[in-house]
Length: 278
Image (cartoon, rainbow, N blue to C red; front, side, top):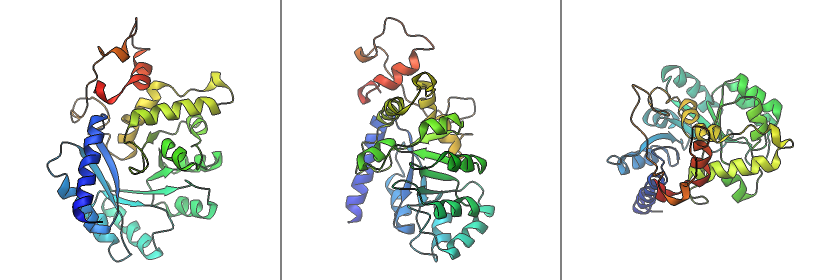
């Protein structure tokens, strides 16, 4: 694929994100340093904020990619070589703010690989975790590893549904992602709605399903910022943080309710918001 096609795809994706109220995104950027530089150059004048997690092509350029990106993002923990892991262990001590993330347990649970993730203590963020057991989640919590769930993408590929009720019962702060732009619309409101509805269906005791609309909104704001080390600058409207937010027109017909108060506003926003309201 030519650079021109990639650049056009990036620009179109950013327009879609902004239209859907996404003002900050995290990107798993392939193609080594070239991929990182392409994204930076393409969006140098864009209003959207970004965190670039590069991907090294081999153990030789892992240091170069790590230093020039905001961290690394592996498609699987099978990918980094022992030599790369050794180098990254050293680099993480020098670059404390950089993030290392990887996909895991999307298609199935691989216990030896999961044990490597826990024992190596390199990974800050895990994407998916669709097939984790409660014991796995307890170990993740013990290591302070963050989790990003991608329920719609899991549904699209038919690989399962993340253990959100177990995660919620353990009070693990998770965030939401859309994962694959080629398979999904970049719409976090749709992501929140899908997660909520399927979790309700799967909950054995509906009265104990504590996944609230406020919790869902935290997953795409406060939790997301914290999980990627951005909470001092982004994630909420607070003094000293960037004014990184969008406005909703609550006068639009789909928001109509005879009563909007501090309790009802959250489900109204989560369940009814469309791009035209932003």
